[in-house]
Image (tube, rainbow, N blue to C red; front, side):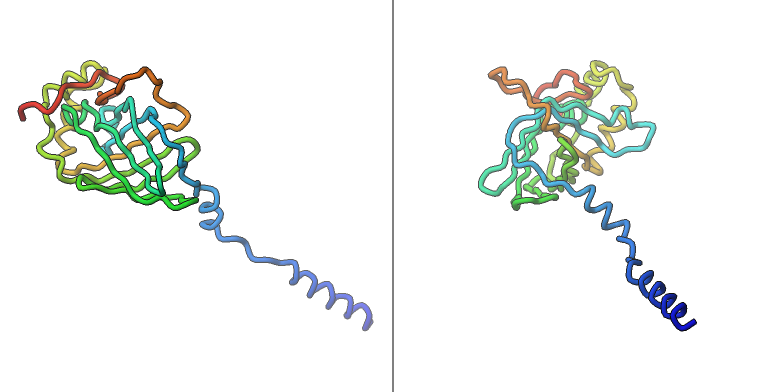
Length: 204
């Protein structure tokens, strides 16, 4: 009888020894989603999205033909032109900031705003908030013409262009797997959903 009880005691403590606490779910998700931001420099095809209500979502998505991502001497620089279909003209954006080795998030800034960049697969996403962009849109006529070219609702695109100046935020994405073809020339400003870019800063 004593042997049996002793055996049960051993089994009880053995069971306790192998029982380990579960890893918190947040830690598991963090390990899966954190990705080192690429330090590969180049010009890549991109995309720009303005956060809006669901009914305006189609008109708030813009193709960006060229986004420059440059990493040199520990500094990352993001350069592109805001979509012509959003701002109605040529409006370049350049943000830069330190990029430590192995960074999974990078903060960029300039006199015109700031942004935070993260990576997912081959995509670098930079959420931005702007200031000091001047009077927008530069030309509503260009915004509306670009909407026609892009095949989106002129009314909805006009609404998005009117909302952006009061809350100038958006996300630009660049795809490292889609470099801009080297045709020997600059690709200039971007339209809406791949539409033709408008002119420069014209009358307001």
